[in-house]
Length: 110
Image (tube, rainbow, N blue to C red; front, top):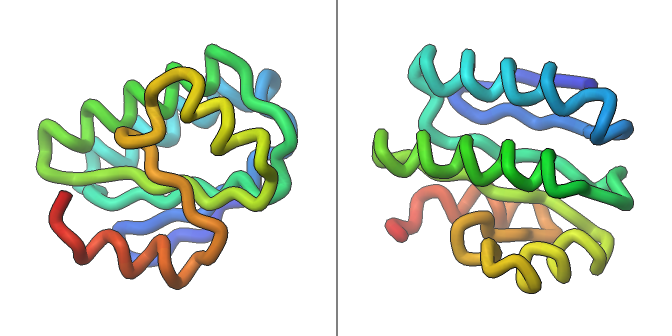
């Protein structure tokens, strides 16, 4: 997992979803508990997400919403947005193809 910290954003290239899920969840919890309120997850290099990983994203989103924060997903592949639409989580986990648009969307109140 490659992490690049910037203010209260972080970017993550998640290559091996199953192998990294627990580490990723622990990282998200630490970020949220340390005060991060806007999290951008970069899945542009990810071709697959499983239900466990999706559950981690939903868990993080709910924690952030309680603290008036939010999460955004960066993804190029059509599979990731399709999975989020099928599971009814696309409103909770907005997907963007462009990093600048994703970052800018944080300034727009949900």
